[in-house]
Image (cartoon, rainbow, N blue to C red; front, side):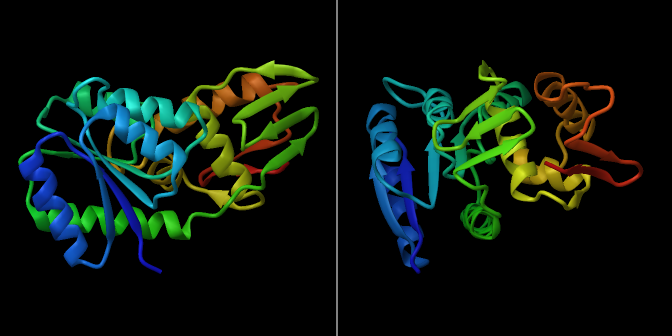
Amino acid sequence: MTHRILLVEDDPGLRLVLSHRLASEGYRVETAPDGEEGLRRATTDRFDLVVLDVMLPGRSGFDVCRTMRLGGIETPVLMLTARGELADRVTGLKLGADDYLTKPFEMAELLARVETRLRRAGARPLAPPTYRFGSVDVDFRRTEVHRDGQRVELSAKEFRLLRYLISRRGETLNRNEILDEVWGYDATPTTRTVDVHVAWLRRKLEENPRRPRYILTIHGLGYKFAG
């Protein structure tokens, strides 16, 4: 199957070069020149990957990515930007981007990252449309969680972590694997990030966070979802 890629880039020259190069690799490439058009395409059509510039007219790439994730759209996002500051990189990843590439970049690196994101997305286990454990109901289509009938507010990252744990229920997952699959990057920040987010999920979803029944710690190995 030919993968469909949405390229959102306001520089017409770069947009042309990138779209031609990706097409030459066998991808079906569609383009958008600004954030508004990019968001409309990403939310109304199906793509396997969105290559998203940060500095866009009208609506920034950060805003596009945030709105996609809040709307439950899990299409992998590779962000492109001329900014190299760590704070900007972290912002994009926190908003739900899967990877981040700073301009200028080598075409070979872009192609490698595109291939990696598509491969991981294709291999990613799927969570069911809805799921219930204990008194918790999860609706993945609506990105809603209820406990005892009351709405529970989860951040985008907490929801993605919960989705991943449920999709791999019964399996012991190490922290690096969770970091790579949920945060989409390997080294920054640290595996402590996983521990913190697991603690937040337990506080919101477990009856007794100190003695969890569903999100279990497997000492020396990682975590397991037992719901």
